[in-house]
Structure formats: C-alpha cells, structure tokens
Length: 292
DNA sequence: GTTCCCCTGCGG
DNA sequence: CCGCAGGGGAAC
Image (cartoon, rainbow, N blue to C red):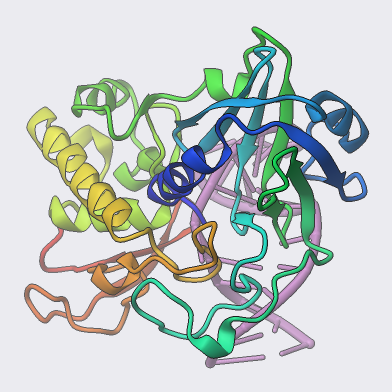
C-alpha cells in the first residue's frame, strides 16, 4: 500500500478508536517474516496495556502504551489495519469510486490466514486487526525509552519539509531525483505513487540527476508533493490495489492521479502519451513533454 | 550505486 | 506460465 497519505488516513481513523482502550486479548499468527518481536513475546508485552497515543512517522505508525512502551508498525506493500465486524477487506471491487463498498460486498469479516495480529479490548468493543498477505509489513515492540534504527535513519517527514532538506542531500550525489525521493533518508514518507505525481506537477523528469535540480525547483517539488499528499489524505488515500481504510472502505485519490499507472494514456495537461520506464528498479510514469 | 530477496496474488 | 506489484534492507 501504503505511502504517507494512506498511513495518515489509517492513523486518523484509528486514533479516536484506540486511545484509552485497554488490551485484554492478543491473538498472534505463527512466527514469520513480519514479526520483529517474536509473537509470543509481543502477546505477553501487550496484554493488559492501555493505548494512550497514536503517532505517524513517515510510513510508520507508533502506538504508545501506558507503561511508555510502544508498538512500531509498518504496512509494507499489502498491510491493512482493520476494525473487526466491518465490510470485508478481503477483496476490492474493481474501480469503485467513493467511500463505501456495495451492499454485495458487505459480507461478514473474519480473520483469515493473512491476519497476523488481533487485539481485543476490555470494553468488549470492536477489535483491531493487522492483516498482510505478503508479510512485507513489520510489527515490533519497543521497550520504554527505546528507539529503533528504522526510525532513526528517517529524514524529515515529507509534510514538514520545505525543500531545503532535500536539496541538502544532493551534495556529491549523481542519482536520479526519483531515486532520491524513494530513499527515506532525506525526505521520509514518499513512495512510488506520490514520487511520480509530485514530479509531474513540478514538471521535473524522474531521471534527471539531482546535480541538475536547483534549490528553487526543490522547494517547488516538495510543495507539490505536499499538495498531492494533503489532497490524498482528504480523499481517503489511493486504493489502487490493496489499501482500504480500517472500516473496509476505499479511498479515492487514484481517480485524481495524473501519471501513475497511466502509461499509454494522454497527459491530462498536454495530451502527450504518458510514458513508462524503470528508475531505481521501480516502475515510473511521466509525461515526456511536461517533464524535463 | 544496482540487484536480489523477503511473500502472495493477480493479470496478461 | 511468467512478470509484475504503493516497501525496504542486505548483498554485491
């Protein structure tokens, strides 16, 4: 899924839903790739804790607990945080716009083999589940005061940046601007969709070397990335493949995208055919006329 | 810097 | 059947 906007949508939905609730049931799947803390230990550490706060750092979520320990979550490519007893998130309908699934999709929601963590609460209200078919997500328990190397290496959050931080990372580098955007070390939270969309609005070709991008362009680029991300958050994120909000409904930002996965279609500005290429091993989409 | 890998599902 | 997918880390 999930880039910064989708994680922020998830955070905003879950925050009022989780805060002040006491965990009294923890069900974990068998140990696997996504558990950075062994499931058995996770279960032991979470049981009885009350959730105090939810924070987002780039594409990570941090769940703060009453003993000052924290749960670090990353959704990877296909991770979903879901509230139980809502419409099924198991399959998205094709090209549905708007917020809700159709009545036909309102089937009972139950955990499946991809549900790795289930949290139940002492108030007996709806549970919260973490589901991730590809297991590229991450779950880690951080003891009180503990930091994590994954968080420590993150650059400034993309929504907080002004462009000078990105420009500062250009020194002595020759990589493509898109490759730098995808690294989380200068600007954190930008993934493949919003990198392509931001570069389009800034009229910068994704393969341009950072050595050729001026500070003013950098500020513009970051401004456009923020504009795209803020609009995406407003519309519930991009539900292009797996992302759904915790209640199972889809976001609709995919309907507003200008270039991502639009190769072969006309540019919405100049009608030139949108091109597809690979940059930094990632699928890349751009308008050859608008972007230089 | 690229390349490969983690893993599952889907579309061509 | 093969190639590809919103991520990211390790190994060349």
